[in-house]
Image (cartoon, rainbow over all chains, first blue to last red; front, side, top):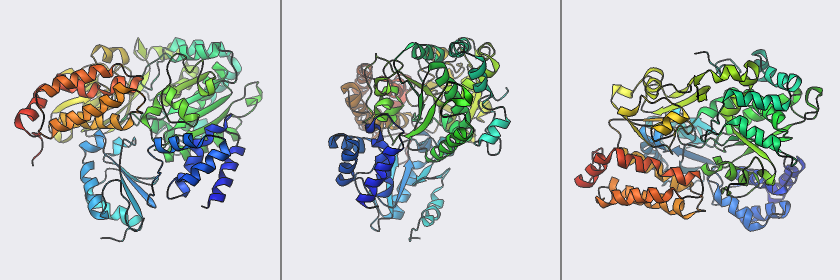
Length: 160
Length: 421
């Protein structure tokens, strides 16, 4: 998405009339940016600030506060590995280590080809399927270490 | 027991309005709208004895009464679907499998309290739920249950989904409201309470998903009928998400007051590989631990408070004899360190110091005096600004008190006894 297209999207958002206060469109606007840009950069924040009449610093505060917003460049697919209690008890740390090995990155990093970002994540409410991981919006439950290459290949991983 | 909250979830396409209507859906709302005054609805909910299912257990009818009495306009009705308490996944089941029960509950609540606009604050980690809810809302508009002059009455109500973006603290109602206003999710001081000064400082009712799913049942069958289910001082059906080391993890609907032991061993199938149960966190990550001798406790707000812990979200997390209690407490306090908003010192610093000390103990570098320091940090955290910090230390302090021997084994042995290397 270009910055002009993004500005247009924010304008459309305002026209929906969903909130009585312009400032409430901050999170929805940040969501559009999160989904359409590699990261929420300063230009994106400036557009939101000017369209919504919210001080730039407050847009940046919100962008940096929430765990799902990326203010640093992320990969095309964000892999989230839950390591909270039920997933941990069911082996999530070994999944995380295996993913680090397969992708050749550390937790928090993005693969060189820009395809995957690997994140250790807090509880995603998938505890009946522990250990659980998500790739963008897709869920994988009761994941076994051996299944990880197949999951990655689904998203274009070239390794083996 | 007859399934009440989960009555629809097994049906094919249970998330569609056709299936919901066929099962008697929106009948309760029509009854409220056409046969009852808003005051009648509030009275019926008060009579039911329903207490909020989000964690705090506040009487729902009373909350509605306060909101209805406020004359400021417009009023907002918000569903708290920011289900973030670790190992809690009960609201997800309703959101994905029975979204219309939630919408109907909101409609009845908005009618009773005079709210014109509604928002479902859904956690960002539930993108599938978001699509399902948005579809359900548009179906409800098409059938005339949402919008202006609903079913030819004077009552108008518009409903939207508001997506969170990954912040546990936004489950706290005032932080949720700040987040709806486009800000960082930091809690506000109370009072004023949201029922008088919430979203945009207007009267705002905030109710949990499961709480709202109870409302159509109460209106259809009556508050008196409802009050006779489960514990007399805390009635109704309750959803218990069970996970960790049980054979059949899942969401179980049982009457309030069902014994913890029965839930784990009869419904969730007992412990994996028939190992021994070691410990249970009975109400999410913020609850104090219970040992295997303490699991005959009835699962309701007053009984668990008496047992020195809490019902919270009702999330039951089970550990077996092969799990390290120090490591479990460490993982939970790491969660709270990550989720602390940083606004107040006891929570921001307390969670950080507890992580550092527990990492040391788990790594075999702890000293005995650490345990006293841990308990004193826990005590200081009681003075936190909001409920997050006040409860965050519970898994740590309670495990130090109840599993002191295991902490000492780490300290004296110079390593975690549960690790092979």
